[in-house]
Structure formats: structure tokens, C-alpha cells
Amino acid sequence: MINFEMKKCSFYLLIVCVLILGGCKNKANNSPVSDYEKVVIDRENNAGTNPLKIDGTRIKEILFEVKTDNKEFENGIQTWVSIQNFKKESINLINKDEVVISEKEITIIIDYPLTNVYSFNLKSEKGFTREKLLTEIGENYFKLYEEEEKSASVKTQPMEEREMYNRNQTNGKYGIWGHDIADLVLTDIQVFKNKDGKLIVSLGIDS
Image (cartoon, rainbow, N blue to C red):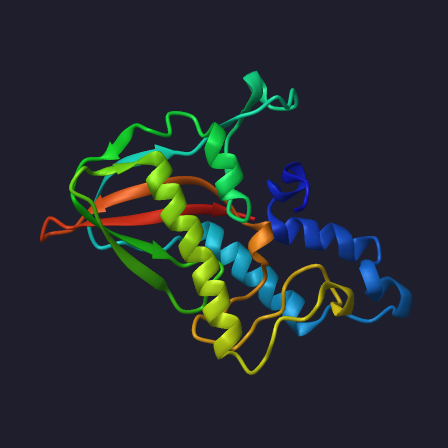
């Protein structure tokens, strides 16, 4: 996984800096910015400025933080959870047993980095703890990436064959672009209630 301090910067700014310096493999052959690089830059910018619109009223924000021994983090608190390593990091998830959603049924929507939205429903008579939400989100990310690869005729390029770090777009069920699952971190979730009283959960995912 990339150093998170680098990942916190807007991706399109990082690409611009790389291109100014000559850029990875393009530096050697002096080739222009590829069409896909332009697409990734545009999509990253759009994801930051135009988040998924949810039909409902926002009622809650839930943060996901992990207690660590890393002194680079203020008070040793990591303000995100790795999607790839969610099982390991859930051990030290802060307030993991707190019931943060008391309702018995919710719908979670995943839209990044997807062309086609993925959603799933959860039910629990006891409501949902922070750890339960993290587990379901992590497992469903792995599920959708696997479904994407199985359903795609354009497969994910191996890292050593890429012209840039970012994942190529595949043409499977969800049209994943730009990021391997190892790039993704969960920072928060936003909870909305629609006109029918149903809860819709949107994810704060960084890369």
C-alpha cells in the first residue's frame, strides 16, 4: 500500500507533478500524457467535487479511526482504515463495539472507484456496531473486485506492465478504474434517511 501521506494529496496534483518531472516510463521515451491518464485525472477530480447524490436527509456521520503505535499520527490515532487490511486493523478500531446505527435495516452504496454503483442491504435486530459496518464494507469490496475480474474481458494489468501506477479500467460488471483494492481506505460513512424512512449509507473512501 502506498504511503498514506502521499495518498492524502489530490491524485490529479500528484500526476501533474510526476509529469513535470518527466513521469515514470514516459520520462524515458518522452511520450505525451496517455488518454487514460487524462481520464483518471478527470475522474479523481470529479469524485472529489461531485460526490454521489443520495435522495434523502443526512442524519449522521460515523468516523473510523484506529489506535496505533505509530508516532507519526497525532496521539497514535490513524484516521482511516485500510480496505485491504480491514480484518487486521479492526482489532484496534476505536469504539468498535459501539452501536452507531440503531435501526434494523440499512442499504450501503459503494461508488468509488466504480463506473457502475454497487449496493447491498444489511439487517440486524441489534443494530450495527462500527466493527460490523467495517467488516461488511470490507467483505463487499473484495466481493465486487472479484466479480469485476470474473466478468471482465479486459483484465487488470499486472503492476510491472503498467505505464503508470494506477489500475487500468476493466470492463466487467462495475467498470472499476484507477485503483487496486490496496489503494483504498475508509475514513467515514454518511447516513441518510429517505422519504420512506429507509437508511442509505454512503462511504467516505480515499485513495
